[in-house]
Image (cartoon, rainbow, N blue to C red; front, top):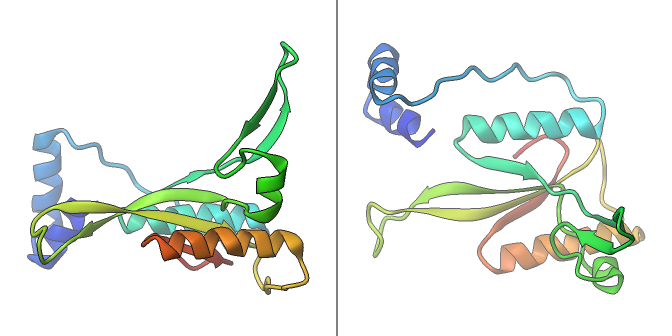
Length: 157
């Protein structure tokens, strides 16, 4: 997607960009249309589509714990080393990276900024009384304090 952004900045015609991609063997695909979200699943799909349109990548971060067929116990997902930790801080639904071009000391380099989005149903409102939401907010604040880009979302990036 960086190539598309560059082409827009330099007013490269779409046909010329398509020809260049074809010549270079860059895969081309059409993203599905956004649907009106009525639940968290649809909201999450729309968020991932919007991210892809911007050249970002977001992946599902499933968090949980359970027993394997060999009876071993496994915890999975980010920031889920123990139940005690997960009770205090809960990683977001979507984890990813967005490319950022730095303009000072790192001119010309593309760096990746850690992304995290906690997806909520449309019209959701934060409540400090909800322990789960407070633990999710702790994750968001941690990521942002370290230079990442984290937020709750009901549909916007």
